[in-house]
Length: 110
Length: 112
Image (cartoon, rainbow over all chains, first blue to last red; front, side, top):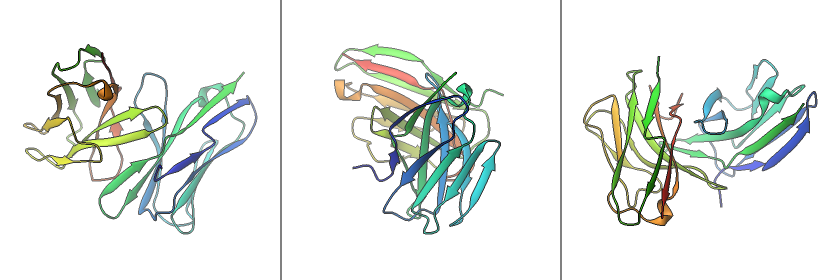
């Protein structure tokens, strides 16, 4: 069982649609990070959230950290083919441990 | 600015062979990490280092060894490769622990 559960596992949508992916856990995290990974490449950091209830926006991407710091969501508005990739969340715990979810694989069709 | 560079990019080993994966970073980061990525499992930490000359075990350290003789380099060794070690290996570095990771582009290792 993964410490961080990401859903959905796969998502295929048309260009212009909106979507939300989720990252859930029963553990409390001191911070949570989101990464995007493209085929054959390493993950690239998108954002870090540290405060419960925090919302951060990165162009068409909106990230939210849950009030209890156990979960997070990523919302993409008007998705574009360039958004295609594997989205990973990673949670840092106070015992100096960082755990990654298995990811949501997003495909945006033109 | 190269960031984190991993070599080699691909490798095929026979069971029982040994090899070393090299990771180099040019950002003067103190912290370096080795992860493996398997389908449906996410990234799992193998070993990490909090500075030159230090190493520590992560979540899945068995069958691997590491060394950090220079601040910019972090080596991952497999002494006797097993098919269960077939995976994609990523190196990462960060200026502080648990924050702002920069990943390399990975090494795809197949053990037959």
